[in-house]
Amino acid sequence: MKSIDNYNFAGKKVIVRVDFNVPLDSDLKVTDNTRIRGALPTIMKITSDGGSAILMSHLGRPKEGPEDKFSLKHVIPELSSLTGKDILFADDCLGDKTIEMKKNLNPGEILVLENLRFYKEEAKGDEQFARSLAEGCDVYVNDAFGTAHRAHASTTIIARFFPVEKLFGFLINSELKSMDRVVNDSEKPCTAIMGGAKVSDKILIIKNLLDRVDHLIIGGGMAYTFMKAMGGKIGNSLCEEDKLDLALEIIDEAKRKNVKLHLPVDSVNADRFDAEANVSLSAADNVSDGWMGLDIGVETIADFSNIIQSSKTILWNGPMGVFEMEKFSKGTSEIAKAIAVATEKGAFSLIGGGDSVAAINKNKLADRVSYVSTGGGAMLEYLEGKVLPGIAAIRSNS
Image 1 (cartoon, rainbow, N blue to C red):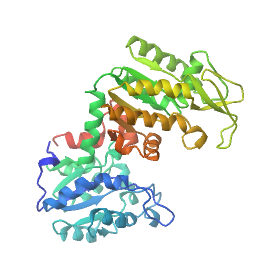
Image 2 (cartoon, rainbow, N blue to C red):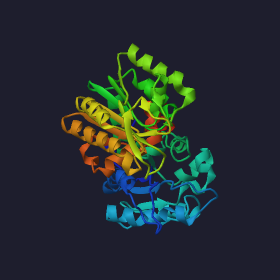
Image 3 (spheres, one colour):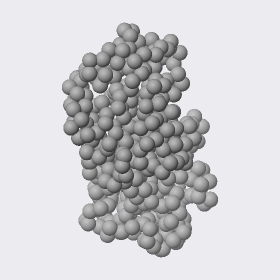
Image 4 (cartoon, rainbow, N blue to C red):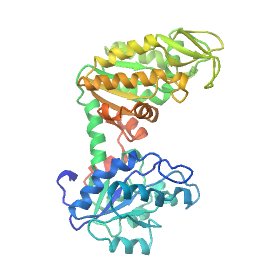
């Protein structure tokens, strides 16, 4: 498998799957350019070598063909600003006009194709659609980790038309290296922090990690399913009634594998699910009737922080509470800070999942942790031990 580090793109037309699925405001301006910045090293390597970069991506979820609010033309100003280059734009990702633009592209130039998902064939993994995307190009580079778990035309099928000239971009390489460091090469003690609403969303990753971690911290809404399974009183807290046996299985399996499982000891509760709700504190397994646990309390923050700060490898996926409500955001923010402190003391930290990443960014800690993953679903599936189609397509020999 070829490596981008020592590949020379001089004179090549390079089609690159990037992830420019970025948020836009009401004026259709980019509000968070993280994903665009993530693709820059790959784009600049191609153009500085003297290659031409043809960028393809999706944006949003258009339902019935082209819609202006989902046009990739809206990312052009941001991309131009970040690269310092004039960016060419094809108003279709297929067709004679687009092929002509590819053909006329000069070394060092960048062409952005229109939104792939304006065609249903993209998500269907249509082979002819993929063949059309590949037309006029010499090399395929996949640098969109966030979509690597989908067998879409532009992420997987297109690789068939580049049996030799296909490779990962710098971003995907970084993602894989960071995740492999946690899963296959972690320095001990290794701690996984799992949060979010549902045990069912995280069951596969938890089971896979029990063979690899020393500590498993569980917070967020899913913790109350464990509390109830153990006989605790959880009031109106979130609970998956059909997963109580599963929670007990995880507890038993953790014991059997000598993994220390840590649950909240205290809870910040609300009398309703509302940003302006009344707040009370209780033991996490003794929430009063009519109240619901929406965040971890100060004792739990201290306990979890101590474990985190004595760890050498840390994986975090999922918030400790209802992070979007200020009254119930402290637990998540404090865990973010504890991870930053541990990283500064020499730990390797990998952060993934929307709310975890949001907490890192909200607390301005992105440069104080080791790696912030760009791929929520893809990261989860990789850590679950699944084969990602977009990764396998590059690693295969045909």
